[in-house]
Length: 357
Image (cartoon, rainbow, N blue to C red):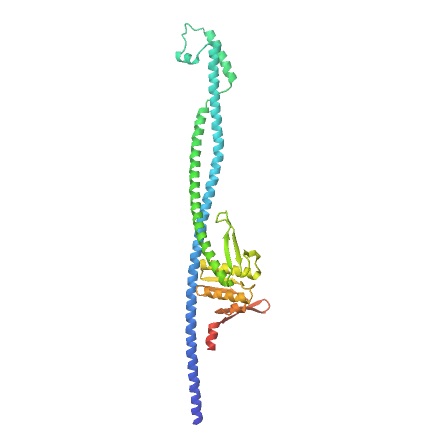
């Protein structure tokens, strides 16, 4: 009986311990479910934000492409019309020259008739045909033959020249109107482009100033002092100007980033990266071995700076540094235990801490 009682107590103790373990497992399962729900909500938010950003980018690219295509089409049409206008204008000018030549030739004939035959063609035309009884028809025929001969020497006269000139002038007016319309459309497009460039300049200038201020502040924090700045190329349009980064680590002279050491370049680049990220934050960021060229002291500063941004953003950091790994919430290790086969190993520090506790 005593043995049965002892065994019963042992069973009850095991049952109690099992119930405690079961309650703990249920609690951990609830916490894990909450973590999964939070991650799913965050993924949805990221997807919505990415979709909005993609839609905005696509809309701007489409609008810019439409404007560029319309401008190119108008410019091409303007060039075509201009190329057609030039020969027409030249032809009209030639017809006007021919008309003037004909008028001069007619004036010359009238002048010769006055000088050689003492006949005023204008007066003769006004007087009408002569009286048959007083006319010397042989003389008239001779004069007519003489005039006919002189006219033949003058060559053929294009009787349709004036009509052709009128038609060409009408066509020229139409082409001129089309050219004016195209010129106005080109001006309108140029105004749209000017407004886009103006807005781009304003946005760029504001973003540049924000990044510049953040860069100076973060650089001093990363290096524990020193000075750094971002400079725009002078005398050039702000949208086309080059950007120079200068830095002066503590105890050194101000110089271009190209003259810094490898670690200094990396830290300066990290400062610029976080400055841009602070001016234009994002809910998600990937850093690929940015700490590879840093020593332990600089890695510690980098980690401190990373902690300042963790509250507002999720970071995926690819690194070989143990110091950087120490601040991670979750570690994913990639190993190749077999040739050509990669394997993923994940560790969640919060679960380990709970188990240890």
